[in-house]
Amino acid sequence: MMTTRLQNKVAVVTGAASGIGAAIARRFHEQGALVVAADISGQQDQIAAELGERCLAVQVDVSVSQEVQEMLASAYSHFGGLDVLCNNAGIEGSLALTADFDEDEFDRIMAINCRGVFLGMRHAIAIMQKSGGGSIINIASAAGMVAFPGMSAYCASKGAVRMLTKTAAAEYGSYGIRVNAICPGVITTPLVAHISEDIVEGVKQRTPLGRLGQPQEVADLAVYLASDESRFVTGADMLIDGGMTAI
Image (tube, rainbow, N blue to C red; front, side, top):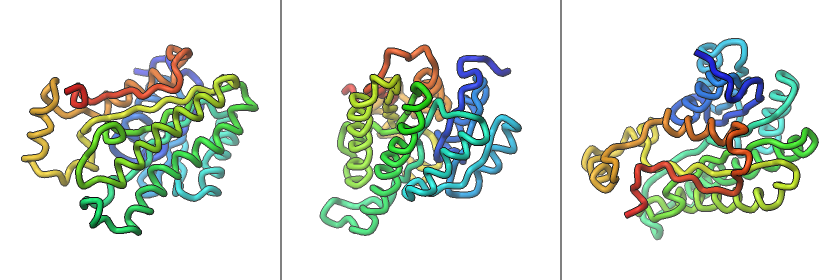
């Protein structure tokens, strides 16, 4: 049943075809938003078909500036504005120790996870400045706060997202633009499906709440940051990791 925490807000969600992005797109839509579901895979069409007329599917490579501009222009032309941008698109990439990490793979991860967030903010801010403000939500990670051995590029990219978030929040608060980061721990998504059961069990044991997170739980936090309820929240790193990084 639709509620109205985001009634008629125009919200763009990248990486919306699966996992956390799909959960955010669905939850935004449930809360009354007009949603642009953006993804590179083509599967965003399925999300849009599921959600119906208040959802527009857009195919985008977030590491390409022109495609990001076109995505945001589509939101504006189709729904008449841009109130919320959720920069969720990201990849985990290969696992290897730092000295063994492939240089091209490092660049690929940084292009999507870091450059993609930068481009989303760069082009959305220009629109939001003219329209009186908005909320930008960047999906970072607990891996941007603590080390995850074998994931140097991923950790670096998510640490960069946190600092891009804080810098933009400081720069554009006077325009009514709020910029916050969500830092999930290990969430049950396709990105972690290949992790061995031993590692998953180890994560659970190190997590005070004793389980992995669910995409819907991240989506609930995103709704709060997208809504006017968080109107005095900006520049924040919001951990949602079951307490994993607290110990």
